[in-house]
Length: 80
Image: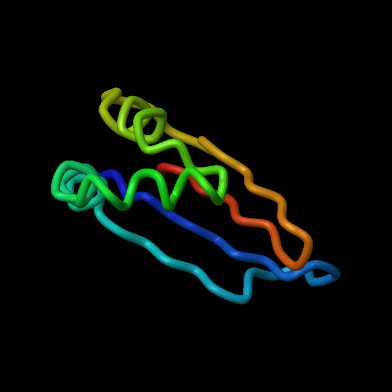
C-alpha cells in the first residue's frame, strides 16, 4: 500500500523532528473533502492544492514529490 510521508527537519539538524505517514488513499480523500476556503490559506504558505491533487492522483508515482524550504525548517513530502 502506498504511503504519503511528510518529514520536517529543523535547520542545522540531520534527522527529522517530525515524521508523518498517511495511507495515500486517505490523503487523496482528504484533498477531496477539504473545505474550499482552506485552499487560499494553504496557497499563502506556498502549497498549491490543485498541484498536490494532480500529483496524488497519478497512479504509480513514487519518491520525493516536494521539498519546501522555510527559514526554520525543511519539509519533504514523498510517496513510498
